[in-house]
Length: 434
Image (cartoon, rainbow, N blue to C red):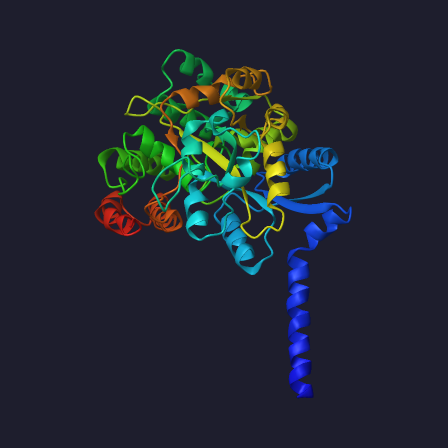
């Protein structure tokens, strides 16, 4: 009986300790100690880390009873999201974190995010303050198939791709200025290819163009070709269609010619070193350009393809809350602070992104945050029928991305023909839809 009693007491103590740990931060708040909130973003470079650390320090000083700990995440690849999923299951994830718009549905369907609707309805939060495209997904209830019923987080930013230009290399190559061609309506795939070829002729260690090896940079060419990843309601793949294949074939053309940095190699370091003439990336790359290059640079919108449009991505990402955070109300206060007009303006001024609040004042202010001088290029991308980055509520985005990424890599590395890609991709991708 003594042994049974001892085991029972140990069990009670363990369970009590677990309960105290789970509620430890609320207990700390009740006794006058600060609640500690951990939060994370996925910065593109050291300059962006500094931006968010500065914001974290500022908000931490403003929120009474709350201390913030900022944790910069990993790279642009899906490993950032995979690490979060593992941490969420093991109980070591931060209270609040940023994820790409594509991954909202996957995290929700895995029951990893806290629905903040009830908490938000007690505050002055308004869904209508933000772009409706992202908010459709942020408020979507997968149980009913209706938007507006949930609140999985708040969009942090929007962006489109642009081409970062090394104007010195372009001038040295005697190539036309892409910004002038864009103003004249002549910035097309053919013009882009000619500029790329001229820059590449400057030397064996110089490339006309570079893009990172993930779905975003590769996907815009299929959009501009007249295709895309999936149909309008995102229930079936479209990468086997003529327009989608045209975009893949165009990429294959400049990779096989040696005009682009090799597929799979990060093009940002050689661009910043002055060895790449044009570099495709989003607004988030701007802080690194401002502090890390010593040549004349600017940006231009992506060239128009056979569709008559550049068909850019409308990128967005959101701050979301760990379902198991012990401090839901404090986390929502942080959520509101991070997406306030004041903080968004500060981050936009530092160059990292475009505000997610849908006001003309925000866009007008964005145009003043230079360099680059041609900020309008990003807004032109927003206005040119972009494809909204978004999750697959009726499918698995991680599976779709994994299959498509491997197949596109095979084509761009010269290991697979366009015909072989086209012959198998539809069946493989359609298996990822429900």
